[in-house]
Length: 106
Image 1 (tube, rainbow, N blue to C red):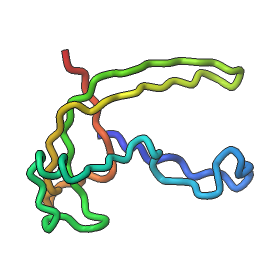
Image 2 (cartoon, rainbow, N blue to C red; image 1 turned 180 degrees about the vertical axis):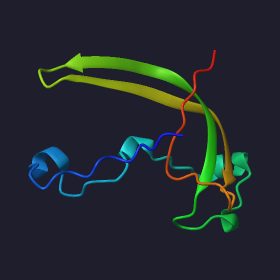
Image 3 (cartoon, one colour; image 1 turned 90 degrees about the horizontal axis):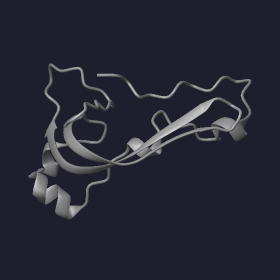
Image 4 (cartoon, one colour; image 1 turned 30 degrees about the vertical axis):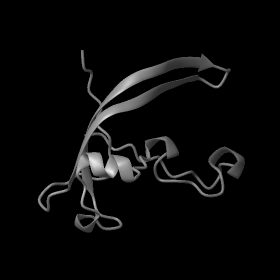
């Protein structure tokens, strides 16, 4: 697994670049599950706690790819739509943190 935590901004970087509330992880990595998805995944919220870890296994469809160079270096993006998922509480012995593992499916 590869950590997707963002680097801390240097004190010399203007806030317009980093934003006043620098997030450890980008918003696009956050997943919000509503009642219907919680039910489908068979999640018992009593098994979870704030700050606790869960393991996520998912299949996603690539919805868009882009690569642009506006003079400041190449900026790439991938838009994924999660179509299938499995979620389970993190076991005590594992070291999973807030990370996302991506593998290619045929």
